Length: 335
Image (cartoon, rainbow, N blue to C red; front, side, top):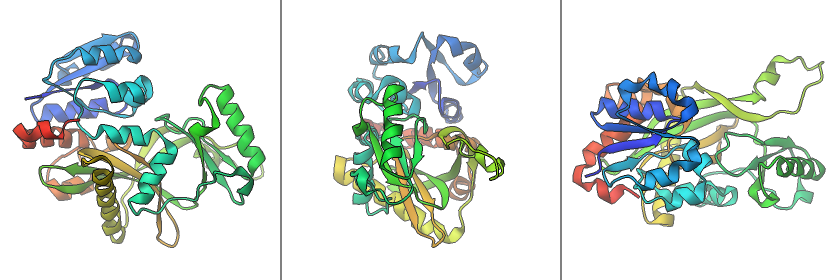
C-alpha cells in the first residue's frame, strides 16, 4: 500500500511533511539545489531529499519512483511543472487530477463554479461592453502575478499587450476579464473526506497582496501607482458564525459538481476564493482544487479544526490522517 508522501519543497511543503510526521508516515521532498540548505533545517521532518537543479526536472524524477509513493499536489507543482506534465505523471496523487486541469483554465474554472450553483462575477468576453471596473486575471497558479484593474476596453487591451510582451501569457485567450466585486475577500479552506463522506471547513484566510494592500497607506492627495495583486503572505480570519452554513454549503456544492463533472469526489483539500458583499452575498471568483498556501497559517490547527477534532489538526496532518483512515481503500481515491 502507498505510504510515502512526497511533494515539491515549496508552497505548503513544510506543513505537509510536518503533518505526515505527526501521523507517523514517511516523507520526501523534491528540492532545488539552491534551496537545499534552507530545507535541511527541517531534516527532522524529512526522511529523503531528492535534489534537482530546477523543479522542471521533477517530472522524470517523480515518474521514476515506486508505487509506495503518493504525491501531494500544491500550487508550485502546477506552476513549475505545468498542467500538461502534472496530468501525465505516472505517480499517484492524493486528490482529483482533473480539477487541476479545470483550475488552469480561467473560463472552465468559472463555468465549474457557476454549474455548482455558486454566484460568480460578471465576465466580459466583449471588451467593448465593459461598463464597470474590471479585474483582468491570467491563467495558471501565478499567485496573482500580472493581474490588473481596468475601467474600459482601451485599458484592458493595453494591459494584455504588456502581459504578452512580458511572457506572462501567450495570447489574450489565457486571460479573463471579470467584474471587480467590491467587498471583503475571504478564502475558504475545505477538505473532503471519503472515509467520513463529508466536507470539512479547515480554515479561512485573506491574502496579503502587493502593491494593492500597500496603497492603503498612501494619502489620496498623492499620486498612486496602479495596483497589482502578487500574493506575498496570508492573514487569518474568522467568519461571522451566521455565514458558516452558507460557507459549508458552497464547499459541498463544489464537491458535488466535481463528482458530476469528473466522476470522482475532490478528495482532500481545496479552496473557494470569494468576496463577501455588504448585503451578505458571497461571490466566488476562484477555486483551487488542492491545498492552498493560506492553510500554512494553521500549523497548530484553526478554530474550525479544533471544533471538529478537539486537537491540533493542520491540513497537512489532515491529509496524512485521511490516508491512514482509508487504509486498503486508499487506492480507490488516488488519481
